Length: 166
Image 1 (cartoon, helix red, strand yellow):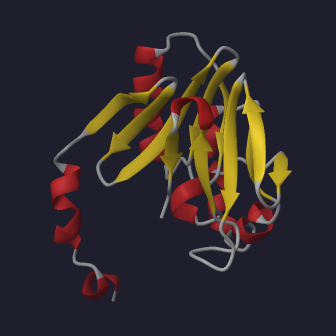
Image 2 (tube, rainbow, N blue to C red; image 1 turned 45 degrees about the vertical axis):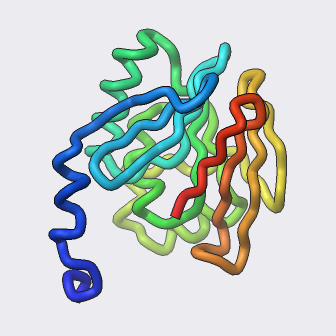
């Protein structure tokens, strides 16, 4: 039934593009693999990765980050929202801290098969907040009653970059 809603051929042009890690502005990078894109912020204290998608995406991301930032730890994983296509694979990054809406863990628990590669939120946020990630200020813009009750968009102040997932 999904194929009726969105034919698989819709994704073909994106799949052919492969992967890339490109600087957007200042410390902000975009990692793209096919149809999916994560934001990566390089800070003096480590890397912040926004959305992880699945284990295949994370394996490609880790390889790209190791090439561009050898030896630099992934300090934070940040979830834009609770949907499985944004949180899977996260456990493999070994982040020191996982940040997301206070309800992300509760919603992901509804899908027990996703738990094995999901890193639970360790620092819950609620509403609009600004966090200092290793000296880089990031505005978490809460968008309830939209795509998800846990949805955030992000503004990296010093780089003047907005990451607007889904």
